[in-house]
Image 1 (cartoon, one colour):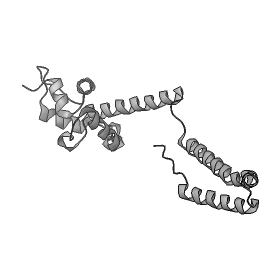
Image 2 (cartoon, rainbow, N blue to C red):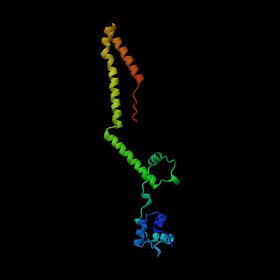
Image 3 (cartoon, rainbow, N blue to C red):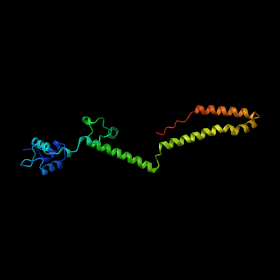
Image 4 (tube, one colour):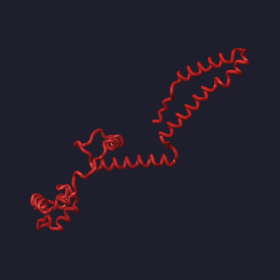
Length: 179
């Protein structure tokens, strides 16, 4: 007496539908009582199966490490069992990635996200305009201030320009962080 079709499928690492198909096509033969002798069926399976038609292990895509790490964070698991990724973990990783992608798409559609390069360019443009306004300020106000104070306009202009430049150097170039 052998084992059931489902037990043999677990033994082979295939679905029970694959075992039923192998029986139907004659690749393996069940015992008279409908059970399967694992040793005999393994030999028949190997002899009667076309290896070119089999799913190659090398064609499977590996689960990205980042995805597995996200699943660990989401589920609170510290380590993978037996050093590998289970199908459940791979599916969970896939669902987590799909949810995060959908969240980003939704935020972009709502206008909550901006393009990082555009934001940096905009901040740079604003900082440049502010700097130029400060550099032009001594030219605009020095003659009026000199008249009110009763001092030489050129001397006041040179002094204001020097101090504005010194102050701008202290501030330095802005390094905005948008992350």
